[in-house]
Length: 211
Image (cartoon, rainbow, N blue to C red; front, side, top):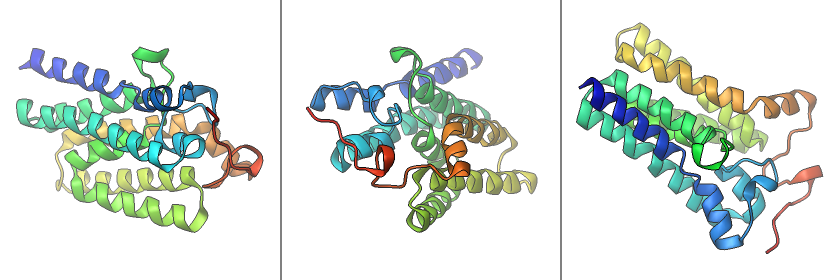
């Protein structure tokens, strides 16, 4: 069982590392998305650079690549701890993918997808909080960070009151930490008042790649 658990975690990282955004940008637009906008391979940078259709494809792909390995961990291993470690491995793979020089996304979508399997109701509530903050502020980063923080706080409360397995604490601590580390530049820009709002590119203008 230990070998199987390790195998599932490795699969989680390798699936999480699939650079969906990079592949979509290269296949349909012939560009390296890491050279545009924020340099992230995630759905937000794809949205700013290539538009909502490409962003929707990337978002869906990032969801699937996170959901599948965590589901495997649940059904094959049946351990909340292994599922949590697998979820964290998926997020780490997305942020630091071995396939493309460890340059990936910010980890928000993959964190949400993994949490949908680990604690579905918390994930849905976190998504709603993120959406409300985004709609109010028009800062994707602020909404994402708020949603992640909300989910982490709720999970800690659930675990502390024995309403959720203690093994899930690995994901609860690890995934938000990764997301906040990957958003460190966004946090600095939010503090400085220079963060771009939704629909804006560099210097407040729309920024799309031309092909």
